[in-house]
Image 1 (cartoon, rainbow, N blue to C red):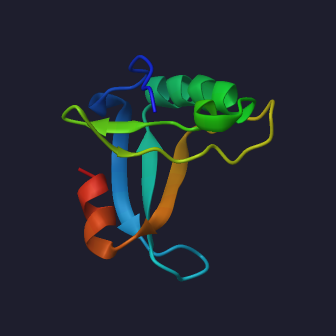
Image 2 (tube, helix red, strand yellow):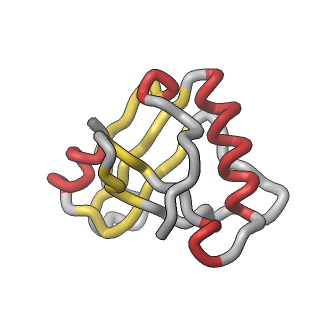
Image 3 (cartoon, one colour):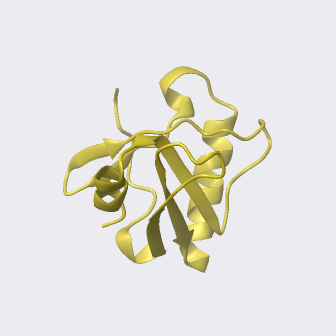
Amino acid sequence: MEVGPTALEGEDITDANAATPQNGVGFVVNVDFSSKGSDAFGKLSATAACATGDANRIAMVLDGTSISSPSVNVPCGGNISNSTEISGDFSQTEASDRRR
């Protein structure tokens, strides 16, 4: 998968925590954005929401390594802002590592 240009930096994220999802299976990472980060992620997720294939995914890159690339699960025309939940059958260790 090809990764596009950087849309957010670390300072655009105000908090990230490993948590158990509502269905209680595996772990997720809950991410909160700054105002600037929320705007940027909202635009990024709106574009991805209307895309198909790999363009429907948002790559999370840490120190030059893609650590996750979840699909955007909102209807076309929608977006994600303020916070998001990243899921992917993570173990507790994997979810904790992804919140760095």
